[in-house]
Length: 349
Image (tube, rainbow, N blue to C red; front, side, top):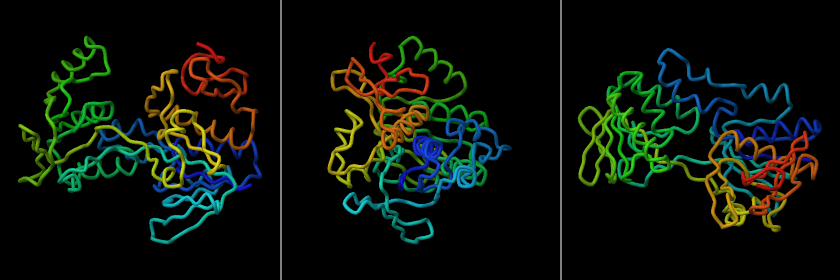
């Protein structure tokens, strides 16, 4: 049995590890486009805050360890570009430019999500960066060191933006934050949001809400962010306006993504396959409402669930449905049930 996993982050490596634990003779191949597969992504802003600390300190398990200790055929710097369900193969190109083709019996798509980079003028300029993977962290840390950054503009005011704001201030870098929405933290209770806002401002950060960004251009000694009625200058610009599912591979292969978002299922004409990880949305009620699944912990759970569904049937696989929205739950070895939809326990509220 050939089990191929596209994507080697939390969901992909969780699935690969579970597959080898339960079926040591299974041929498990993981294709990951970056150089890293097991690292503390949540620690990147705090690592960037410390110029003396190596970014590779965040690596939990080197890729070679998966190969040697678990027997996983882990191929880093392999970018999958096409999934051919009819021939049951995936095709792509390595970073070195060499084409490859890998056959599969079962396929797991764990491509996660990508930072949203607006399609506006200047967002491809040097010094404009997002933070999603360890390579991004390396680029940011290297850019700060090589260009003696003293002022930065951060687009967005979400989790990553605020964490990077704290990291840059720890390095005595002036920070200006801007977003198009009028509310600082709209997802937070108003009183708590006000407290966070005052704390941010007390640390010398300038906040500009309600300003739509129109583009970025080169300026003397750095970059200039152009807004509708405002111009902000900085040596670097960090884009932290959110992520979108990296679902192009699945979509081009003919998967009905709206159905996956609702049920976590794959249409019959492209089976055997499964989609998991941060790229999914999960149902949170019986009212056709969904929310982004953007969490390493949840992505890891999805990876283990995807492996169980592909190979192990009801053992550690789907066992019940949540009474709220009928989404299947996964049974843990101890016998308890964790609904995928995040609502209730043991199939109920």
